[in-house]
Length: 443
Picture 1 (cartoon, rainbow, N blue to C red):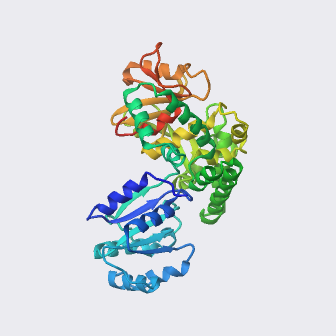
Picture 2: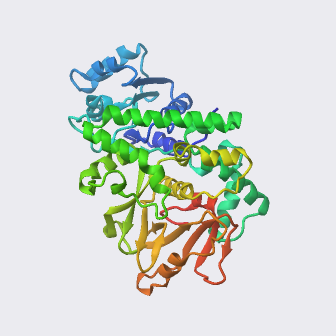
């Protein structure tokens, strides 16, 4: 089935810009990069050449000689065995991290200007092959993520008019029409299990079989472990990275959800493992959320590198990695389960997809607040509540009470409709699904 993606709008804007450069698309494996480019090419180009450097490593020979445009285009034309049409040809270089010289060649091809180029890769941030010369100034960048909640709603038949109406309710901070609210809450429960990996979403929409969804998710988790084994630089690095990856579900299941290295090894220290966390983050597999010393702008300058929570890139993968206990409850009809760590993972991946960097606050005299959003120069604290006691949020209240930090309001994401709390008029309760409307440039 064809899944509608928000990234399509970005591709169209890139294509319609007469001064566009090459488009570099990155993101974790299996988030739909290749499929999106293929579908876009069908609708917008007469000629399409796709080279996947993992599937066809022999294609690297195209870039082994001179890197001037005429030679490169002649080689590409011979390889494709089809004539290229200026202005109507897209050349797609997939898994380009496997061919560093192809990445270097992009600047010469873009300067030539006759054809369009899209590069893609799942491990572009992982430095295991050195690029001779990066094409600085010749690439535009797009990061893709698993399907967001809005894209999941589209896949399950929710019309854009409903999304727009609910978005209006978010902007005005008024309750959502109840019939819409109930439908979105019901589908949200399934998103917590299915997540946003395109193959998992397609399996769910086509079959409603969560067992089939689980099989897809476990295959993806296996693929990620294979990548660790194949691409991590050293045996020690592979061991560290795999230990971190496998520990994420259990670490998130703790009360404070902070990643504790001592649980991996009593002698583990952050300075030894920092590059291993970065490997997983650069591969798009995990989402680090840093603690900050103060909730003031800019948050980046207040982060503590040694204290962080670590989320998986997809809440559905977290469900599968956690032995699928939540999925079982859903299949048994219990859509009111306590989400626990899964809810925070959802918020982390949704905020990341919207463009936020991830931060949280935790101090002894105040307590832990799940997320801090930086919107312009304003800081907005967010609590993600999975149970019925969502009106109890002592840490958030204490944080907002510190006058020197000048925090105007806070959000509590919960299973309720929109509500302004009477006991604290600066705290607003929002249904979980409204996370999809939170943007760095404004709400």
